[in-house]
Amino acid sequence: MADRIAITSLGIISALGRGKQANIDALTNKRSGLNHPVHLKTKHSNEFLLGEIDLSDDELATALNLPTGDNGYTRTTLIALLAMQELMSSIDMEWLQNDSFAFINANTVGGMCSVENMYLDFISENTRGEFIQYIDTLDCAESTLNICKYYDIKPFTATLSTACSSSANAIMLGARLIKQGVVTRAICGGCDALSRFTLNGFNSLKNVTKGLCKPFDEERMGLNLGEGAGYLLLEKESDAIARGATILGYLSGYSNTNDAHHPTAPPPGGEGALLTMNEALRTANLSSSDIGYVNAHGTATLNNDEAEGKALERLFEDKAPIFSSTKPYTGHTLAAAGAIEAIFSLCTLEQQKAWPNLNFEKQMHDINISPVTEVTDINVEHVLSNSFGFGGSNVSLVFSKA
Image (cartoon, rainbow, N blue to C red):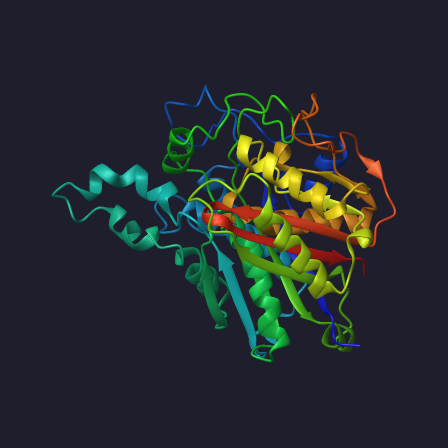
């Protein structure tokens, strides 16, 4: 049997809280993290509900033993560092630094959360302000580089940006690098912070709702944006066993495809999503009947839920497993979504529970399946997690019980 890809450590921060247990507690108690923003300074603060992390930039910096104020770290990086802190807490840093490993990070808008606050300074004649150190932070790799500097690690690095599927692609790339012998281990995931740029952009596309998002509901009106970060440590099962690591689960299958249908909309029949899910099952050497739960992409936008729902019907025919979207908990965290929901999928396998699709009320007319709405005890060995991005960038990951 081929050496499986094991997950041996993880870290997460989201609007549900800091750390895996805080997130499990919120999921179990059906406690959403969506609220009107406090830390994002926007004229729309009282209009939109967002999945904002309940810590200011200074509080994030203090938790990391960094100076407060203009310290050169964007909110994006501070969030990522806190998620990495949990992952690193169970790792011997000397072991990691002496081993060949990759750090594959995902992001969509870089440090826009900080840069947009300094626009007037940038275009002024004053070139001596503290804002100068933030000029280069627009690059999506800013968080990647600063994470490596903070932890004094020098891995093989890559930064991926494939919209909402970014960190799912990062996880897939890490697994492939390990399987091909390029590296021994990989830390994979992604991060994104809320910004006015993001909120205004999605609002211009008419993709955000002013109420609570309702994935797979006939009366859904759009998504709620969120922020967060999630990271997983991947390695071969034999290596994990040899060093006595606790195996949290396995990445048993993966696939990415591009349906090239439209810059922001999926094909209405779900062809891209269906192909991706089928390919992920094929690489896992599983059939659709082996899947006990699907963590759906489920953005609550008109186009996504129709396409994904039809794809799920076509994949599972009349035997669809329990499925739900967890975005009513966290908001759509963009580049971080795939990693955060990968962690939620691992929590499903550990807890043997399916997480409810909050706010669902009315069956969609276009599909015959509906999501689970209560925390449900299940007997599950394999979970399918979907992440579908703008431009038709689709990723499906299969996680299996340890």
